[in-house]
Amino acid sequence: MDSTVLEAALPPHRQDGHHQDGAGITSAPVPNTLDLAASSQGLRLLVRLHAEEPTAALLETLRRDPVGRGPLALDRDDSQQAAALVDEVVSDLPDRITHRSLAPLVADFAAIHINGGLRACPTEGPWLEERLRDDAAASLLRWRTGLEAELRLPPLDRLPDDHVAAELAVLAALLDRGRTLDAVRFLDRHPLRWMPDFCSRVATRCREPFFAGIAILTNAHLDDLRDRLGDLCGLPRPADDGSDVRRRRRWTEGRFPRACTCDP
Image (cartoon, rainbow, N blue to C red; front, side, top):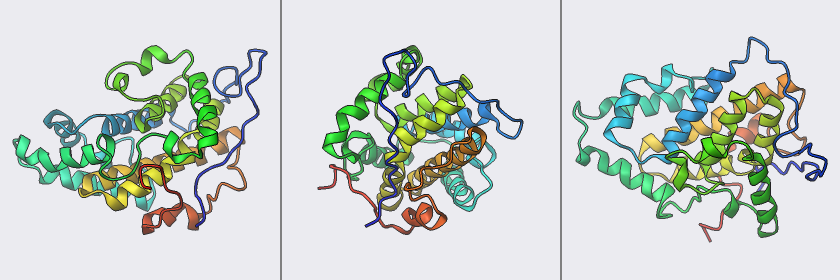
């Protein structure tokens, strides 16, 4: 099958202090049409949704501030439908959210992020060929340089560096600092190499519509952010990344372009 995984090859790590992975890349000027703060806020909400087991407090937050009216609300069908799905699940919960009403969501979260029941690894390494994993891990360490204090705060402190939530947090931190070129390169080097396939697996295998919505929102937000940042920075997608409309939407049809080692 065709793969939607990006195979963007960045130049090797330089020894003169100007890193291709991480610090040393000058950010581009940001026009008024791109709200970096809102994009970062959306990423941080996704971090919580991927890192935190559903609790009454988290769901009350989503009830008070519906996803469809927040920073994840994009002008595209997949995002709007996914946000409506998440908001509908939350609105259907009882006024007093009990452990019993949370149980199906907690079980599905565990299947995705803890016990491997969904056979969809929430970390980058298993989605890569074995020969690429050491290089990817070293690259992540470089990207995290200077951001460690922020990236070790709960709930990220208990997650691997290549967990979906941890990589989204790196991207949010880059946007917070106005490092737009870095954000594009990081997207190509890490999240877009595997998260579309992870989101595809979750959206089509999870039991609860809540997590299908989160998966679709994650894919849509990263896809949209790559387009807008790419236009801003003059960095189009690699020619072989399979990002035409047909292939970028293929995962929603339930076909899996690449498997991870969680699913032998």
